[in-house]
Figure 1 (spheres, helix red, strand yellow):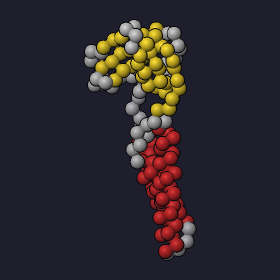
Figure 2 (cartoon, rainbow, N blue to C red):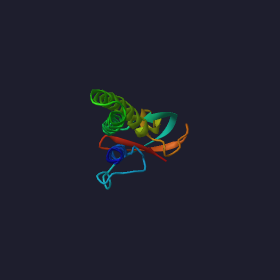
Figure 3 (tube, rainbow, N blue to C red):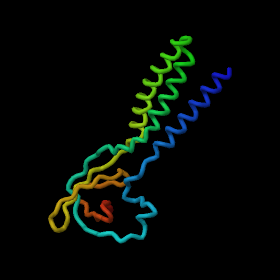
Figure 4 (cartoon, rainbow, N blue to C red):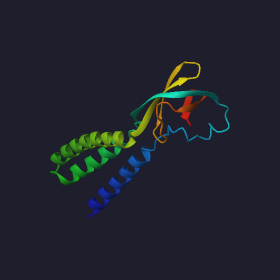
Length: 155
């Protein structure tokens, strides 16, 4: 009974670590960090040439690998075999759980984005990738806001 409670508590802690580690920084044109607020931005105007859907990959924190490894190791080690067999099962469970956890973190942290190609009024072309939280269509007039290496496309 104590093993089941301990296993459940460790699995819950590992899952909480995974969820906390998946918080991703936004690439939305509508969200600013406190450090970006009240900063002057360069403003340019142009017309949308093309819009392409992309996936934005979040940062890999390692939380998925750690959580999956802990859950897999505990689950396999506490339920399979005795003695050396239990240790071997725990190691294999940890490896497989770590791989599965890493894959889960990778999938959870992905989000939809847009690659927006804009022809500026001076004829230059720019392509910006940002979160797909605003719709853009070819031919639309847009603004490009740039500051500190970050450019946003807005209406």
